[in-house]
Length: 99
Picture (cartoon, rainbow, N blue to C red):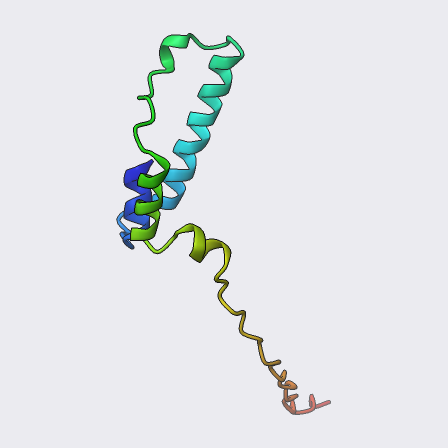
């Protein structure tokens, strides 16, 4: 998932990295839920123990421009859209049918 996340943020378009990240996250969630319900063996729960501290996460988030302060306090102002005037279609004159 991390690879797809970084490649998506890096703008790589060689595959749909955002969709791959979402798919992998959904599969992980489903697998964890099925293990917890006893429908899958516990041996499948083989993810490594978390090794990052909250400080590490803050540093990583800051490195990509997302930290607690920027994501909570600073909001990007929304630009108001100016209404676009719709053009009235011009009716073309058609020659009258000859009788």
